[in-house]
Image: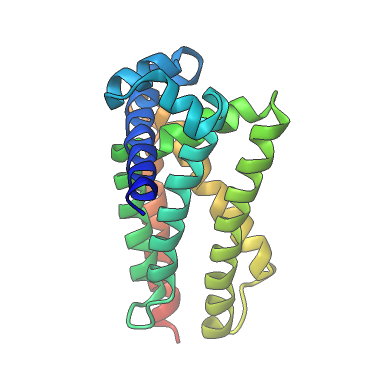
Length: 200
């Protein structure tokens, strides 16, 4: 029992260190040696728990993504909040995810997945988890508003998912500093939801 707990604790320490190093150096320059040093564990522990650099990074994505999906699921299933309030909170979460390093991890792994099928499979599964969750919310909006115009709930889910992933990419590219109000535009969409709510 104690050995199992120690294993879980070491894995988590390594994943938190990997998140920090990835945020600082990016995917291409990240090394398992740097992660081991940041985690304060022997390099052999990374190979023991994850097998390779790729295995460690995929575990990191799954570790972070499952936490954030759980967080988002709680938000989207909170019936005490209006849809507009949930949208506002989702925008707050985007700010938090930029600060935590999750956005950098996701975008680095998306780029890596273009040339690596194993990475692509994990990222596809992770992103579809988000699309499915957003689809549930879109179906709620469809019921509350009596339809979504020419769009199906699944189409809205794809558009919203891409809006947030695109906003993350634009942020990391520094486009906000160049005059493209990426996150502000997302927040303004919440105002459109409020207008639609006021017409019910």
